[in-house]
Length: 171
Image (cartoon, rainbow, N blue to C red; front, side):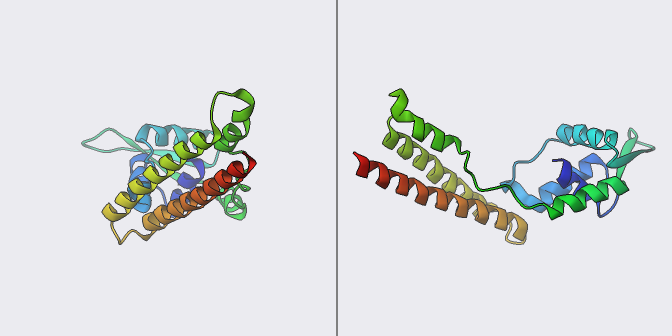
């Protein structure tokens, strides 16, 4: 949450609730929405680390609010984030660890594990399809997020098929 908040503040000062609304509007309902408390805790940590600064703004009919802006250090951290590449391929996959260890424990059948995981992926794909249909077509970012998740799920399903074929050959 730290770096996305910095990115939102790069365009100009904002308070926590505005940042939450910006995230929701940008990413749509496909992305798990942070609660406003989580955002304010993160803003406090960013301020303590010198990446942002906050300023109390007096409001006549409401409690004061704190407006945050990016510092030079925050802008530099954001630049560094954009320079980084994404994580390496998933080689530490929890499901694969279960699959590999199942025969050694005798507590789970590998094919049953594959079938259960396949059902989970298919249910997730159905839910994402419903979400995509309900999401505004104008929100291309949200649509791309859903499409990316669906493509990853399809690749995972293909991989499960491959695992099952290999394991059935070993029997």
